[in-house]
Image: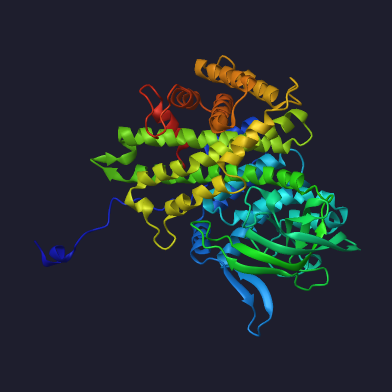
Length: 556
């Protein structure tokens, strides 16, 4: 043996390469098929361009750096003046600029039919790259229509919220090319129970923006505090009300919104989540006093859509990483992806990912068709169902996908460990905007109003949605029939989660029948709809077309 060979401890081989340099949209067959179903003849040139942009190595570097070098709070300047500003790494701004350029924020409200469906597809694609910068993007999307309750604010702000120019400068809105908005609801003493909020609003004067109030109180979770303005809840004389609170006042002075600290979170590192106090902050009434809860529910339905979309995007990226790694990693004489038990796991993950995408995009179609009475009922049904089930499945999905990479998937490595970042991110969408119990109980509330008309009755709408696939699979037929009989008999609160799960599974199966491959639909029904369906991934029975499912899901 030569001295050189003896001194060499090892050669690096049998390690997978980074997954980059590919078009996230062009390689996403399930997404393209679903879009063809919901938007036949759709011009997908913008999505093609976005998919190519998001797959570039430099964009992945921006995602890594934005998370590695998180936001920093500067409460005062060097002379002791209060400034309450958050500084972000330049990569954060690059990511924000890309999301805004492709209209993922308020832009769909200014466009025609199909805009919300296309935006949903783009949101999922962007989430594959980096989810945490999408918090202000999602909030801007959700709050923009609520401003219609104050025409003066619409005149000054609406176009800026839909602008595709990102403008992070700390200036009054009149001097900006584009703007973003956030929301502030949660207080220490009440999370989902916003009626327990204690922040007080005192009327001050009538102004060109309408009725101005002074707010005194706090918010326990106040994400993206560098947005240009926020919709917040506070107690007015007539009850809980919705207010518009800008960071800078019309005269350019700093509003009395004090950022106390930034949250130290498990994940979502690039996003600045904060605790704030209102020390007589100026805020303008949106809508009527005492109508804050209905307004927040309307905004919440849109952010809940984005939670489902975001989890679907994270699932797709975790699956893509697992497929890519196992295709390049050898074990026991052949690639991991060719090992039968691993191939079963990958196919099962692919089923879950495509089903999540199908349910989330169907909800986006319901949002897109704002004036359709039937779709209004589907929004009421699908919002809690998709938010509950898709987000609930996310963490288990990420753990299984991480296991496909072994120890390499568990390593952070200075932000290079994308799978680890996904794993830390996954629980958030399940918690944000209403956790599982809130969603399951919301479904029960939606099912209570009955008229027998699919345009005015959620249960009738569910029946109508499942009817086109009647006879496609005996297990789906049985589940659909049992759902309607259970609902008719009355579902106790203790069984609300099981009902939400079963409604989600039935709808996912119906959608897969209509725009996926036969192998996917049949495997989904076999593994998800049978009695005692297993909870662990990788337990698909013999006879499932594993090769067809894995081939359909490959990212390149």
